[in-house]
Length: 102
Image (cartoon, rainbow, N blue to C red; front, side, top):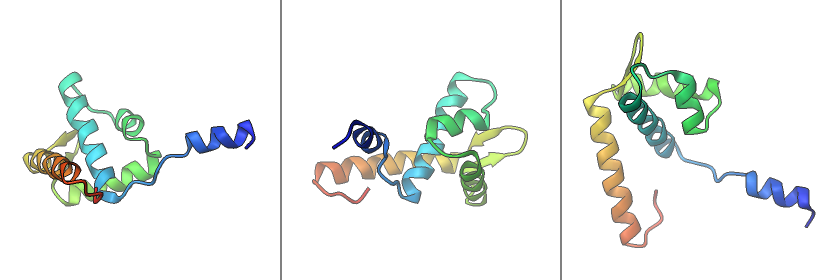
């Protein structure tokens, strides 16, 4: 295997499902809101590893599901925080059981 092929293999990331992407975005928003006054889309984009266009699409979906508010700034809602806690609890459970669902 050529060095270039090895590098491409290492750089290639495993595809994430929509639930994982939602969780990644919500985690980014949550962490940024603790560290900064205003949560900026570009910070969320870098932390969640998405293109800007895809991020905007997912932010619209999260807002429609009432997991975030996106007016002048992006804020995670109480429902969004509950989603993160539930997702983490389920992820830990499936990991302990040796299941590979998430």
